[in-house]
Length: 122
Image (cartoon, rainbow, N blue to C red):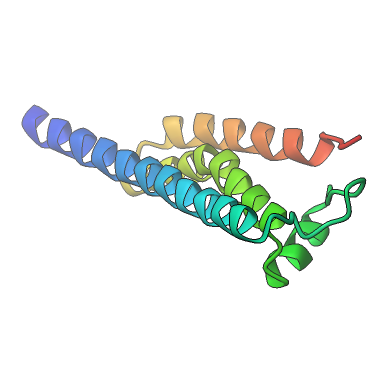
């Protein structure tokens, strides 16, 4: 029975590890594309004194293929990767019927979400 639990834990660690790896690689690719576009065009897509600060402005810039918005999107992906990792961990703990850790991880997830919502950009 102990061997079965060890294999489940190892399987969970592999899933989480792969998720983190994919998030970091995706973020790096998106930032690289934005940097490449910036170097090719020598233009951020915004005037010298204006930069997008809200998710909606960044999204509009992303739709318009503005290099700075693409770079910011890559950074947002990098920031959100561990948050999604916590979400995946909740699902894995529920699947494994480890409800204590699912509750603890849910509290961590809620704290992360609240901290993002309460954060302010100046």
